Image (cartoon, rainbow, N blue to C red; front, side, top):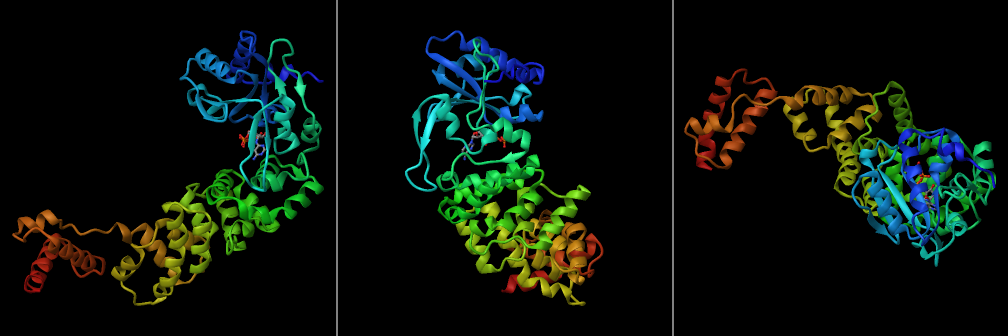
Length: 424
Ligand code: ATP
């Protein structure tokens, strides 16, 4: 069993070292704790000399008592039990790479059917490592005083980190949990690793099981992918291997959308706002496809808006090419469309006259408002009520189209139109 204590001491930042040292001290204080390990992605990242994210600690024994002592030693709030004997310590103030320290009870997981949530039982560290996704994530480093720094690595994850290889732990892994297909794509792209050929074959053989994941789980995976800094490469890889199509019938990411994401990323102009990314990624879907995607993803309102916004804009966008379209008509159409969909159309849509109109709307026209306010109209003697809004709309349209040029002209127009409303 190799000893990698130096990863915990000289190779870790002061903040991580403080956590590891505390774990070491606390592990000796409890009779009902057999062992404490730092596990998973943190070990992988420490070996790679990358800054880790959240810290995952596996405790063989009393994880609750351990996590409470750790939180108190760190001077932060008590842990919250998040799921089966798992305790989350809020670490946002601790200057670690991630926002939490997760203390789990070492456990085994079994799957009664494909893509189901696992059945969990308290177990040993070796079972805890067996339940993991890839060899590079199935390592544990001991934080106990007696064998501080000993590496537990039954699947030779260390060798795979050295070979830069993503390798699954067993043949049924992607069937048990198809979210691991997304995870493989994320790790391969993020770390610049290749996917071992058998693992890659198993991934494509298991694509059909993605269909069994709930909308929330699949959406969570897609959102994580969009949140990564190498999102475009991940989307491209997912598209090429059929993962995008496996997520939802009708979903695809076009080559133009990928090109745009690439070039915006290169220029540093890519918005990382989820609604913008979704609008670009789903650009070109027709109405029926958009509806199916929204249903499949059990999409919350902001997702739905971005995806259907594209199709709503596509319906009207040809009107924008008319040479004599008035600014007020432009506003009437585009005020109904989410800004993310308009931005996506400017970036990915065809460069017809409409692109200039869309740009003009985004940069100038949408900010044009009448100088006249509802209060001015009330002061001028117009009774409060829906008439005020209607008159302001008329004035706004006239201003957009250049028919009124001052506040006085706006007021005159409103007063001129007033009788029409009063008689109706
Ligand atoms: P990141 O740097 O993205 O946080 P990570 O490897 O720490 O990567 P997490 O999602 O935080 O990933 O999960 C922590 C660990 O839990 C992983 O390293 C892996 O060992 C295990 N794990 C997480 N999700 C799964 C899964 N779906 N199947 C098996 N093991 C998983």
